[in-house]
Amino acid sequence: MRCPKCGAFIEDGKDTCFMCGTNINSYQQSNNNYNYQNNYMQQKQAYNNKNDYRNVEITVKDGDKDVFDIVQEHKLLIRFVLILLAIAIIGAIGFKYYKSKIKAKEKKPIVSSLYYDIDEELNLVTNSNEYYYNKSGSTGVECSIKITTGTSSSNSQIEDYFTKILDEKKPTLDENGDIPNPLDEYIIQKGTIEINGASWSYINMFYHSVPGDTYPLLKYRYMSALHNGSYYNIELFNNNNDTKCTNSIDSFSRTLEFLEKEAEKGD
Image (cartoon, rainbow, N blue to C red; front, side):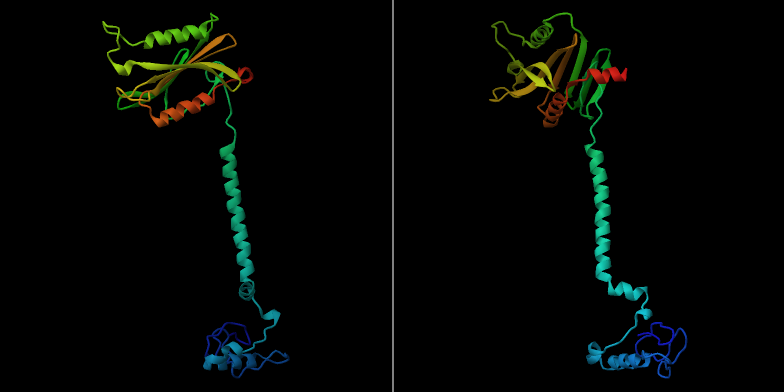
């Protein structure tokens, strides 16, 4: 309850206000039809008889309310507003983070006019017109991507490149014309594919992982394309059929794109 003189809170059962020293039992509010004394007596009686405290009716004028009374009266509304504000703040932060993630990556040619995106785990080694990315493991280089470019001097550039590759990978035969090591034997898959508006020729070479297995695994993939008088040869290597390496190679292949206009702007 409150002091009828200064309005301070008074502990139940106390007769004297600790703030202004007023004795509540003897205090009389003059020139006001609002009876603090009556209020106090009702509260005191309710305190002494706790079974009746819910039935006590106390009249309070608007002018006697402070900020704590207002907060108490509207606590549900205030909680609702605070929850909405928190949701709005979290939503704004989440939207900003989402926008930063979906922002399109700027494309610029990396090798001549060719743009691509590559796994950051692959280490880059450059040598004149060759870009070589690799990841080593316990058995040496386990995953790699090699990109070579130069001026094309022949209409059969791609066919010559593939012929050279097949000659290099041809297994050594014994005196009977057989392949002594069955793991050197491979199956070839050839074809063309369009990637981002450009035609690429490819050779896939499948090897057995163990002698006698039914399903050979893709170990080498060679890709080649001609563009504006230049050739682009790509060698993709997955030594142990590592799933992560396979995903890196596939993702890289899908990003291949020629960007002549962007290259001119860069100059």
